[in-house]
Image 1 (spheres, rainbow, N blue to C red):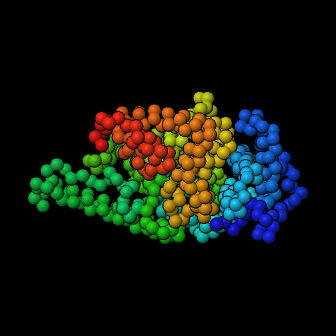
Image 2: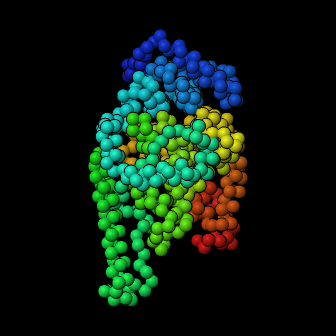
Image 3: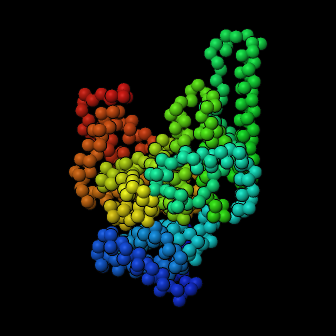
Length: 489
């Protein structure tokens, strides 16, 4: 439960008094301008509806002390309009249950605090939800400096400058003139399980185990194997020391990640990941394939995408993070995880006929990816309510993490996670295309799946959310009695 509420009764929680009342009309006008743009592109078409959103938004601005600087970010202004629209719906609703109304207002409050970030009177709540100030930026930077491999970092930076990421840059519309600044750091760290080092260990030569222990080939391999183990153990120890210095629990790392320190965006790679990308001529494990090499490069492309024109709000892994991971996967070739996010939007598209993936590349050649334009297009297709739902989607690993943002978890609990968002999409589709239209869409989709694999296996893979359950229920009821899965399931 949040300690703040949007507008409960005065006895429970008095409305927030703005810090600077004289400035409030400026914010109201900025909201009016933002709504005007949504009218121009057809997102808001009813004048009465616009007025209600304006009124709800002004109340939110006043109660939370939203600054004028907040509205300089067009993407956040669009999402604010979606949140104000939701509040307007609540005010218009005939719900009388005080508990239901209070819970909804707390959801709105939590979401608004995350959206506004430091541009509201609740900036301290925003910072506290992230666990800020647990470690200083100076200590963070010193830790990264200590474990940075300067030589390999320099080589990776040079490789990128020489074209390693040119394809993803082209697809994003990134040029030297519009590229957001970032730096590359290769870190001498490795997870306890050594997962990032997949493909690095030396492979015994053919017939090695038929040789005597004192054979030169045996000695040579043993030396290589011991050297690799020492290398790996040293990186694992570094990883533990790195986490300890950063105040983190656990002993694992992603192969690559993005961090921001004092406004500096840093693209980080574990040493083993960087070496596999850079040193193509070095011997790798016999089981390491070209596809594995492509997946390692895709990791770099995925993280690079995060450094450029991201759609997650405030550049944080909270609001919009599901869309941001979908975007990073799209522009890196969809070679990695976030199956829950990808499948969510795939399933919802079978009800609405639209997925955000449809518009990632909907730009003129050479045009840079623009987050505000992206959000506007979602709102044009799905309405402000659909936009808000898309922004609220969280990948499951972001919520399971014990270090997750407290407000983010509270919001996710309120909407019911992926399952709850899918149920809401289902109810919306029932009103727009009817249950017969929904079943026709799911029936056609399942038919295509059945030609390649067993639908039950497909729908249950990577979780079994609401729409998948509904689709499988329909398949079980209608599947041919003589159906045989082509995949053998």
